[in-house]
Length: 376
Image 1 (cartoon, rainbow, N blue to C red):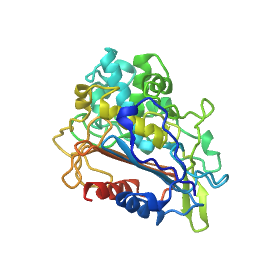
Image 2: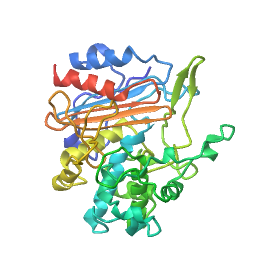
Image 3: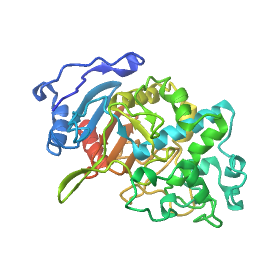
Image 4: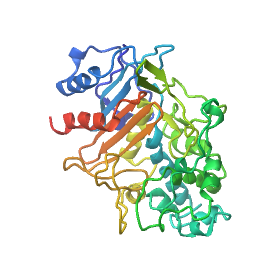
């Protein structure tokens, strides 16, 4: 198993520079906290099965970065810091950032209505604003619940729904589940529409806007919104599921081709750069990010996390604390992938877990890792 480990690299100090690649390090060379993290993942993942990539940034330094297992079962490529995983809903923070940049540009406002971008949307959409799409109070149903049953005999790539088709599904009369702004309900539909809004407001395809305004400026050269037949994912990890007969590749589903809600692929190296940009307010100012970190307030049915417990939500980030420590975080789940990012800004601690297997709980593992650094 290849080990990629960096200790003491000053991210905030060297942003924009290439990360040096260190030779494989022995577990014995790790500090006591890194050894504890390694023990958690080594016990779960063997060298020749789908696995995970783990990143810990503390006080502006990468203190742990390691891959476990393989990116796919055909080549048995070891997972490392450059392996790109489908982020699933962790992508939503990039969609939110794109909207925030367009607001800064004066191309739109958070109070703009959905019907301003899509005039043929039903009258019910007049009360749906950009802000309500961002914080999941739009009332729009999840498009997965509106899709027709898929033909299992067809190749999955032939039956995948695209963003424009999601928009058409949502134009059905009386589609709203509740009056906008009155309740909170997690909605992938809202973020698909936000991706389409980015295209309308900027005049650029969503993936190109992300590349030109976010990924390229931050030197996230291996991060992209994946579109089959248009671009290719470098060092791509493929999703897997374990069944009675063992592992099988389960990389795509009928909903794997939408972009704004979960279509971004990225690696540990690039997510370290993303974290550094948030740390130093490189892309968005503190005031601009402050809006994204204001918990939404609703009169009924407030936000809940993936485990069903009370939470808080802003623009593309959950915001509820963990054991008394404030955090901004998100999780991602899609066919064959489990991902999580947890940022404890006061403690200057960030943990990222990217998995290409469906039996890992990335959030549980990220919090177990965070505990090692929060409570040494």
